[in-house]
Image (cartoon, rainbow over all chains, first blue to last red; front, side):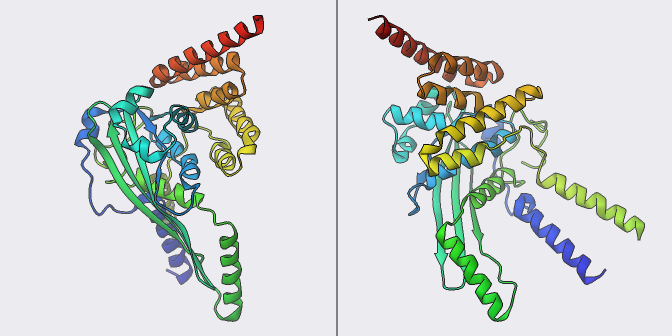
Length: 220
Length: 124
């Protein structure tokens, strides 16, 4: 095997690991989830522990798609946020303090997904910048209030400094400056969601609108 | 060697299919337009247009509109005071996704009340 081809394999396998095919270290307990069998998920605005004030709104644009693709009915996130706002629940801490039963009853949802943004920032240095997104997810039953699933994901993006010498340092400095001006957290948030929901053994089993519904017990 | 390539191809295919399953729905510009709207709330028109495009494309190809998109679009119309149009889309969400029935019924009642108040005010 030539070095080039071996490199191609390494790239392929590592890219696969990045999108969520990594061998799970531990397996989550799906007993409650399997027995309750929720069809619909209400995503409520996230608690934001980061310094980026708009992180919770930005995050909201990325969560519906992977959950819906997994086969669940996902309530319209922006509409839910606005309706909660109108009902005096504009503060995410207040929303999260509400029981899943009450939130579920407001919207007719089977389960409520509470997300907390643990980290959402860029670490600046002169020649390099690392962008970090860390999220924790808890899905609770609106019927019994028990935890159906939980997960935590941290994704770090660090522009690679492939060129050595002065040219490489200049290139890295340019990348750092771009990231500093307008760090884009969305791809990281998308990757965190993807890993959280799709990783075998710790992700979320398929919902009723997915072909693997009730057929993925080996993986989850 | 040729067999090697074939095996590699199958493995790549298996790996790829295991990683990123094909999309069930066409999401169009859903994520980027919602993100754009949160970055700059004056971009509500772009969000409305993006949701409209998703709905048009799915209806034309007779595929499923993604969960929540009819409702999201209806709610933007509702916020613009277009209550009758909003109700049409809340009903579409309910018809396509029975899980939304409770919420959509509440929104339809809400929008109907708003429409009645509006016509009442117009008569005075």
